[in-house]
Length: 340
Image 1 (cartoon, rainbow, N blue to C red):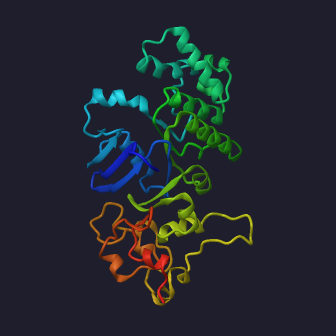
Image 2 (cartoon, rainbow, N blue to C red):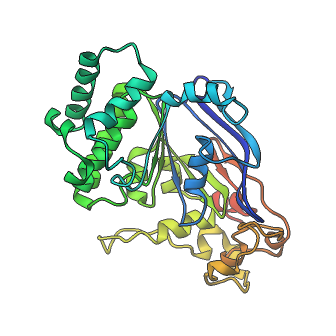
Image 3 (tube, rainbow, N blue to C red):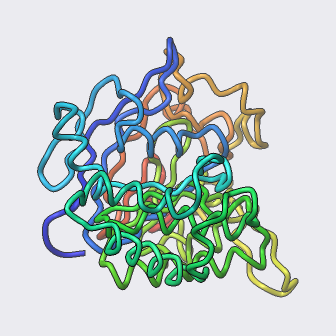
């Protein structure tokens, strides 16, 4: 993506008691771009989303939105930016006030950020937004419990986008919905993005959905970004062993389809001679480094079949292995250029 970034995150760290939930997170997001964020449960995806929006306080780091550091901004200045920073949550019913009608829920952002609107003009905006997300204007008089999960998510999306924000954070926005509904919601989000020109940070466990919606994808493991690449590059030729393991775990309907297997041959002939105690996946509880402990080295090394002795003592930096493709692995260059 060209031009100035809409959002820049630099050296973001979040600490809960004695545990580092996020460590040294840095990335940029550009206007109109969708960046996917994937990783297993507990890896820090939601924590990152909440830290960016300052719904929780990071230990240190910088989050710049349109040149303004959100983490250092006073409350009044941050509140003014809220209209451009919106979030769609995982549980649509829980994100809506059960005592507030749908019309009142959608009108509330307009009352706060566009107080000059007359009541008829505000009602017209609410009706138009409801119809845009596939609901009738008559729905405004009803309450959240009267709608299905998919309809509630449409309402949540309408509320988040009625102000035409510049950045929309979707935190597992389709994971609680039926598969038949997920595609409709994803298409709705993509249509709204094109119409409004907003950027999206799209968090999901569903790799197929992430590949469909994202221009770039970030992979997070134990609170640290381990790979960032364009969507096609990451899904076509992943460099980090953890990314490969995620993709290899995706079920395939076609038994003849080629799968990404974490085989030694993929990383080069030299890897075939490497035998470590971590040849098979270790339990997550056995990983000390990435979850806030004082252990050195790569957080993934105890689960990685490609691990070298170096991996247990020296944490690999996130570096650009090929143009636009970043990976945090001591052996990422071997994946790209197999040893002879």
